[in-house]
Amino acid sequence: MLTLLGIGTVAALLLLILFRITSVLVALTLVPLAAALLGGFAGSFGTWAMDGIRGVTPVAALLAFAVIYFGVMNDAGLFDPIIRALVGVVGTDPVRIALGTAAVASVAHLDGAGASTFMVTIPAMLPL
Image 1 (spheres, rainbow, N blue to C red):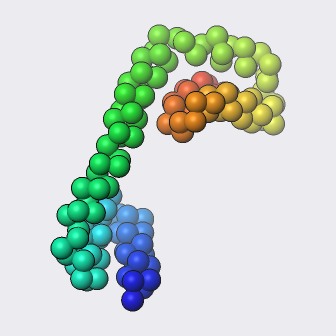
Image 2 (cartoon, helix red, strand yellow):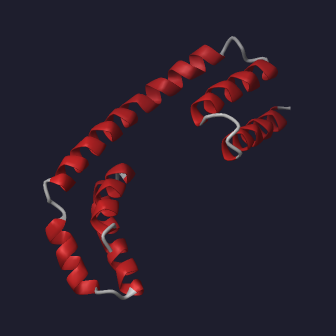
């Protein structure tokens, strides 16, 4: 029963979001609530929601500040020397550009945070 409820929840989310029937926020709020009510978990839903919010809040705060920080660093031109050096090395060859992108992402991911990797790699490699 729970397996079917889980599969139905995922299918409903995909249907609502991919076919743009509703916004992502509404779908991610109402579909799990409806699934919890259908599964008989109405009493536990509030506890689960608070536990989820407590688990996500530090990551969301870190991501918000990372976006601001790397946006300021990009506007200040911090990544410009890296871009110039990389363009000089890789040229216009697509294979070398892909390898250069992988190298930048590997160095940026040494801290282990995917958000900072994205925030460093995409602005640096976008001109290519």
